[in-house]
Length: 236
Image (cartoon, rainbow, N blue to C red; front, side, top):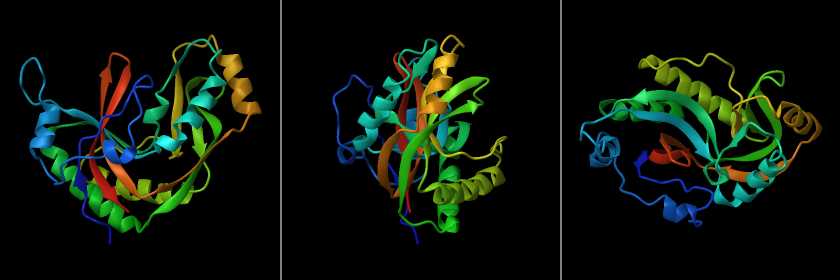
């Protein structure tokens, strides 16, 4: 049986920020449901009213792999039109939820807790490496790092979470699940040929890590790109 989910607040650093260990970054108050933590994350600074959070379920890559992710991004650095993600915020999205109102957070937590239990997946090892592009190499919008070991377990978690979250009204995915960590987004096609050569010609290995939990995360657009906070942790 999986441990009860833990509600935390965890800020993801920008690439230029000093490193903070995962254990320190994970600190927070534990409790589920629409607590003061949930409310404080949703209050807008200008009006003081509660607003929806842009949420998703994910497995975060550990700090130890950030340098490897950055090294792969360097191979694409000469490609014009690419907007790179923060390697210290790299994650594998298990399910994108979209906008979630504060009063639904407890409902989402219940659904995900049930899904993790039903999936029957314990802690497992995942390997990160290889390259790909969405939706295709002919029309590139996203460049990503793939997953080797751990694909089966991530897929089981995705399928269980998909069932439980669609049952409470969230939209089903409109594409097959491919576990990956996003490296960059392509804003225009100037660097398309270089990206294709790298994706087709190289298969970098970033490393492996132990997956022990799935996280409900919140995303906000900051001045330097998306900023992520962990809302709740679900232990495997």
